[in-house]
Image (cartoon, rainbow, N blue to C red; front, side, top):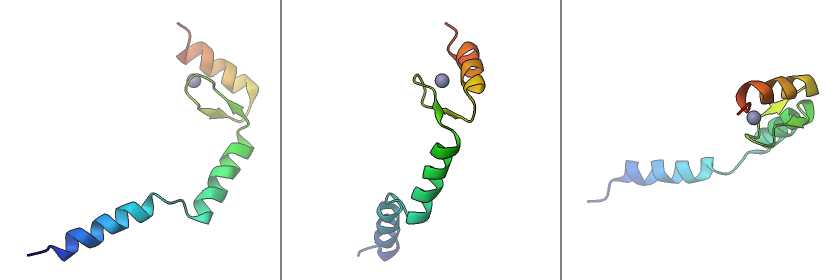
Length: 61
Ligand SMILES: [Zn+2]
């Protein structure tokens, strides 16, 4: 007996790993709007000031 539902759900999972064009565009926009990236945790910020504050708060040690 083969469980058809299991087979189709695993196929859906693998296809969701591929980014849709819309997701790519959205991620591009996020990177475009938040050009300041933390080099320690890869978080993105709109302003250099936010990045500096983030670093001093999260990566102070
Ligand atoms: Zn960080």
